[in-house]
Image 1 (cartoon, rainbow, N blue to C red):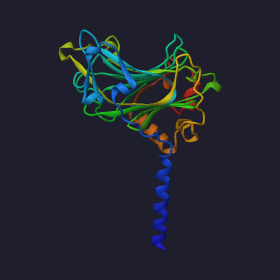
Image 2 (cartoon, rainbow, N blue to C red):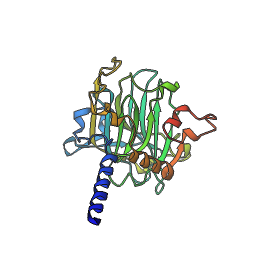
Image 3 (cartoon, rainbow, N blue to C red):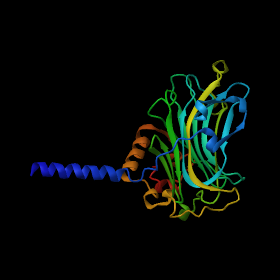
Image 4 (tube, rainbow, N blue to C red):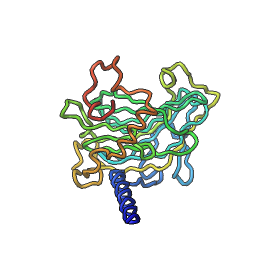
Length: 294
């Protein structure tokens, strides 16, 4: 009887673990840089390694550099392996983001804000809808992002935008159009990444300036995964609802395990959340309660 109970308990735990992982995005597929991306500026500041399976962006006191996706996408899963600028990175910003093309643009941002040697990087996320952002959240990471590659990804569908770090959700921005909050749903976006100097604001509000004696600053990339609905810039929507994996019911919300992980990030590593900034927002923005961000 005892062995049967132990077996039942083990089976139950296995089923619980399987259910907890049910809403994980599909595994990203690593491809060479040239499959999905092209350089956008300062081509001589991009270095290609291992047949294009890895690239490095260089920043010096002459210029930074960047790249963008060949296609535009409406919904999907987008992932990058990144190793950030090591050492004294104060004043530098490494960005990985999606953005549409017009003045009232939509945007989904990862921005990595450099720091003085020994101080942790800050990861800032933001969501722009209809040209308006002001939805910043900032966290410290639970590892040193300069020592090795880590995976940063976005799952975007009609129901939510989820930011992941190594498969751990660090932010969930829910579709709250019924509350009068705009949500990116009809503007295809390109993916962009860049390494640039922003010492007027990036580190301690601009108090810490870039030390150019440490240049060139180097950010390294691998992976280059895109699994999205490709559309022309003029397209108003991608008719994928119910047809692609990210449209399925299990990806319309986080599961219980993912919510626990998100709350762990909130309690241990969040250093700024616009949802709780009563100076900027005396009344809590309506989407914040739905996102369980407060």
